[in-house]
Image 1 (cartoon, rainbow, N blue to C red):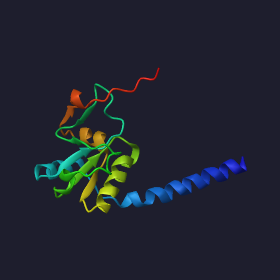
Image 2 (tube, helix red, strand yellow; image 1 turned 90 degrees about the horizontal axis):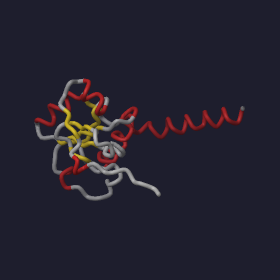
Image 3 (cartoon, rainbow, N blue to C red; image 1 turned 135 degrees about the vertical axis):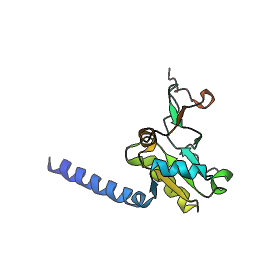
Length: 141
């Protein structure tokens, strides 16, 4: 039991250090992101799993940014003044990680506080994910 308790405490300390850098990522309220979009900012959906369900929704007018494709150059990200990111993770984990990487590349990025749920709660417009962007789940036989 003692070893398990020490391992758990060690894991929690490691997670705290790992996430410490992500806490400094700028966060904005959904209404601020909506105003920014009106001024030319782009909103990106960075969910890694949100595009498998035919009933999936997203922020109206947002674009898909696969969190695993940041190594590929994307002209539209660097050509705008601000990008806002959202996901559906606890604590906006994916959004914060992607924003941190974009900030290191010189992009002015911020995370939408509350993600997609925060946007919906603020009563801002959402839309269904276009069927052309829905990825079917892999089938294993």
